[in-house]
Image (cartoon, rainbow, N blue to C red; front, side, top):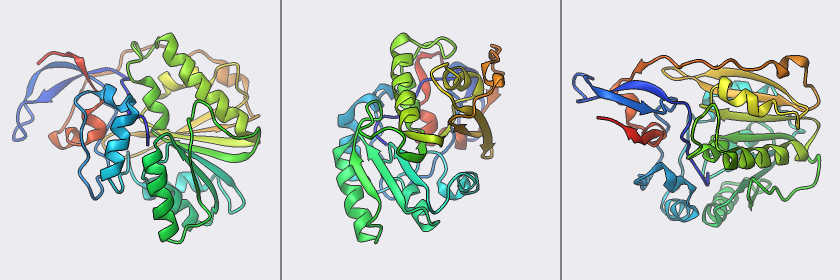
Length: 287
C-alpha cells in the first residue's frame, strides 16, 4: 500500500535487552498494537523513521524491488469475516492495494467485479502486469488518491482497506485528541468512502486501531453507517470493522470513555516484524 504506517495507541512496555532472556531494559512509549506480518519474497528497504511511510518516493523505490508483501495477516486468516459481506455480484473497491494478493483471493472466491487503487504508479503498473499474467484480467488497478476518490456516487457495494487508513495517523499526536490535519484527512477519506458506497453498502476496515480510538471517528454525524467490529489473531488482535451504510442507530452516539491502556511485555519474536518495529514512537523512547 502507499502510505503506511501509524503512530497511534501508546502503551508502556518493557523492551527486550537480549533475545535470550527478554529482559526489560527500560520504559518506552511504544505503539504496541502491531504484530509480525507476513514477509514475502524480497526484503523490504526499511526506513529510518516511521514518517518515511508518508513519502511517495519511499514507496515507489520499495515497490520497484518488492514483488509481494502482506501487511497484517494474509487473506486466509480473515477470509471467513469478509465472506459474510460479499457475494459473486458485489462490486468491490480496495483502497491502497499495494502488492497484496487480497484481490486475487477475493476473485478466486467468486468476487470478480474488483477495482483496486494505490497512489504509487510503480505498484499500479506492476500489479496490472502481474494480474494479467495470472489470468485475473477483470480486476482493475488504478492510480488514485484515497482522499479524492475518482468515482461516482453510490457505485460500490463494498469498500475494503487493510491498514491503508492507518497511515493518516502518522504523526497524529495524542490518539485521544489527534491533530486537526489528521482529523481533516481521515474525514476526507471516510466521506469519500461513504459517498461511493451504495445506499446499503458496506465499508470493511482491517486494522490494529482499537475501538476506543476508531469509534469516535466512524461515528461522526456525517455518516449514516452502523459500526460493528470483530477481532482475529493470536498474540495481538487485529480489528475488522464493518460499517453498514444506512443502518446507524442511537447506540453509535454513545460517547467513548477514555482509559489508560495496561502495560504489556512482548516476546522478542513479536518485535521483529516491520509492522511492529515502525510503530515505535522513537521520539519518546527512553532506553
